[in-house]
Length: 255
Length: 314
Image (cartoon, rainbow over all chains, first blue to last red; front, top):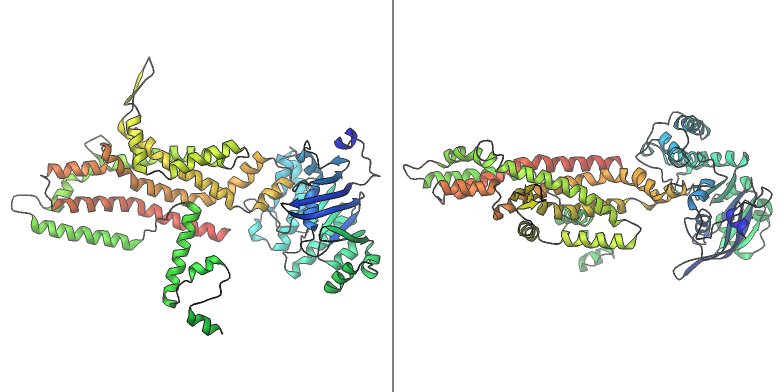
């Protein structure tokens, strides 16, 4: 028990994120009613489902932005649902990208990326800058280093947000409907960035409405509705051969 | 259908604020209704009205001044000096007091500077306490803020004036506390409470996503506040802060009641020395009003400009 709490016993052959029977309520409203899933290192999973089904809440619980009432979330063997948890330590391992980008508007793109490694991880500013410039190249934003978020398009801001998260060298990345607020023509550039990441072996948990993308990059798809996982499976079986009527209805509405 | 609704005065509103805007059915009144709604929103955000001085106000004041001068001129009998002559005679006394004293209007400014300084520092601290995670700190600072924000300035001023000793005896040294310093303290209390609200309001007005993204990057609360939240708030706080300074500067004559020798006291003294001629009273006081206007007008305009500039940036 102690070992799991401190995460000492975790080895890469165990699930990197292990969610077991998670219950979460906002007041009287129960949004998660016993959700379980395991994500192995290097896996990319997509959570889909109608709005209000608890998808975003679930991944916000993984990095402790929301607390849970019941169940267990282990990140590399460390229990998130533990009052003693050092949330800062957890968040150094778990990166998160939001629907609304949430860049710091008073800092340039480069500064946005550099801030956390320099001030949280106390890394050397010069080294961080070299890495930050590489990350900007990686998300294909060369030349935008000194632009402020207000001067960038939604898709560019979202890619800066991804780079900002990557600068913390997380083990897991959470993407919370990251393309939902974007113009259709900029959605692709963000998806390509995420796909690159997934192909490099980053462990990714995505909440998304982009079915084509989910099918292409995900190792596993989870379909949630009203706080439970209705169905899950490998992309091809899931999309072509859904078993549950609720899944089929949802897919028929959006595909 | 739509026309029917229009005629019966029933309109479908998307939200309650919209309803407030368009309560009138007369199209000509709509701009005014919208303006008053914008004003009301500012009042809610900053806890005060925004000084909306413009050039017309100066024209009005000069007009009043010229009129009362003319009337006084006509009322002046033979041997006595005319109103303009009297103003020139007493101008430097009202502005600076007797040679080398730095009283009169200069003292109004000195009081306003110091009260603003103390009020800002104390108010910023109080405002930060209002967003503390510790409930007693939050509750206590809220109480202090509300108390001083909702007390009449004059009552606070009187209390401080009579509560404070005229000198502080430290045993080895006796520090005199002149009246104007008591006035500074008296004024800094309501300023402190209002700045506290400005700080709290600015922090609350930032989208919660800023806190969340900072949290998910493992910033602790102190770092989040000082490196991410507050730098963004400063920009939002400057216009209401300047506005509060203008309100304070215009409120400083209140302390003339307690005998602080600032511009209103000295204007009264000057009138007294001229034999309390009733025709001079409006001349002197409208002159003083112009002095206050000339001082606050550029500052108020500047705050409006800053606000416009910031509004475009974000």
